[in-house]
Amino acid sequence: MSKLSIPFRLRVSLIIVIGMGFLKTGAWLWLGIYGAIALFWSFRLRAPVRTLAQLLGAELLFLFLLVLPQGWERASFLLLRSLICLLIMNSFLLTLPPHSFGIALKGLPLPAGLQEIVLLTGQYLEILLAEVNRMKISAQLRGLSGTGGWLRYASASMIGALYLRSLDRAERVHAAMLIRGYQGSLPSDSKSTPKERLWLTLAILIVAGLTIASYGYA
Amino acid sequence: MHIPDGFLSPPVAIATGIASAAVIAVALNRTRASLGLRQAPIMGLTTAFVFAAQMINFPVAGGTSGHLLGGALASVVLGSPWAATLAMSTVFIIQSVLFADGGITALGANIFNMGLVGIWVGWWLLQPLQQLLGGSRNRLPLAAGIAAGLSVVAASICVAIELAISGTVGLNIALPGMVGVHILIGIGEGVITGGVLTYLVKVRPDLLPGQQPQLQKWVVPVIGVLLISGVLSLFASSWPDGLEAVAEKYGFKDKEAVAIENPTPLANYTVKGLEEQPIGTSIAGLLGSAFSFGAAFGIAQLVVKPKDV
Image 1 (cartoon, chains in turn red, cyan):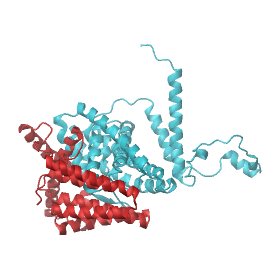
Image 2 (cartoon, rainbow over the protein chains, first blue to last red):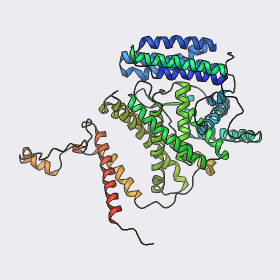
Image 3 (cartoon, rainbow over the protein chains, first blue to last red):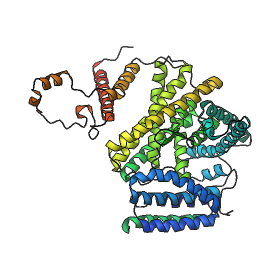
Image 4 (cartoon, rainbow over the protein chains, first blue to last red):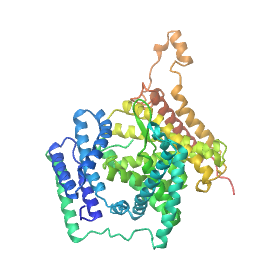
């Protein structure tokens, strides 16, 4: 597991992804450089290669369906760019310590009001997924499994029940947070150290240089 | 419906980004007043819920699939379209930034289409529809289901227009393609929204808005006119009208002359570029009705004197 702080990891990943988002379509050389940076970053974060490959493979199928109507030349560029973005963000997500998704989201550069919602969303996603697993096990024990299993999730009352069960837990978690002094933000340190700030500035300069250069030397 | 990077031109991406940022700023301001710490779990959980629900695709037709957008559902559960706007914007930010679902450069457009249009169209339709259906709380799921389905179609129209303005694909291809698929996805959205709310009405009615107040007198005719002009015009006959039929029969149709060229984009009750598509007639009908209503409303405001109090 990498020793870099979670907000720093998120910020660097975001800087690379945003820079790539603005890359000129068809600038293959600069995309290649971004690809090399992404591979280095993924290696630096020590992302589990096997899990990463499985995730990227599944997401690649959806990407194919999405971009192929664009024509082969444009589609292949969009596809590769999306794949590199996914490589970076999946490397970040796969190396998060347990229960730190909410803390990671707090590192997003957003207004305070949105940050609070993002933080709670990150926390409640874990509650929601835990409830999904419980309901899944419960359904399997009742013999509701097999190829038509997806119908369980499309069933409206099942979704309603999931919402209410999760809300019940969310309210209890929130009450516990309030008792412990929560006032809209977690006591996590999302401020960067001077060394991290230096690296972030350097990353911004490199990314801005690469993206601007793609418009001049495509 | 998430637009990836590279599909939108910079002006469209910037314009939708600015519009979305402005509405989010207003929503933050409005929501701070209406949602306190007590409401925070509902807000956070609803956002997480919509995020998770959007990951579950349901099969539509022709090998395509759709997923719940959840804008109308979120606005009903949260009781405020402003709070729902924040919840949905959060979902799209997380999806775009962390999961590369929807492009970073298209984030503003995705928030605009699914977060703003998807929520506000549903919200504006919800109360009149509930009232039209009787007004009781038990009618809320049906009204919300219909509103949710229509909001998905409205959002898909916006996507098609943005793609056309960006020069990615022509409106005559994008609009029928997007609307056709999203009518089916809208049915799925409506069924799920209605079903979830039916469950919530029975189990936790305190979470939902209650009886609707008396409907303003102009709402029913306006909704009726929009439904007729927008939906029923899709099935309008393409045969010539009475005068045209007579003119063709007696051979004076060729006497028709254009005295003054009118450069309207809605000539012959269709939209320029969509002459061959039924949806062109539908959009022209909706725009015409909206213009007529606006003109009549404006004239009425000018002519009618305010009542003495």
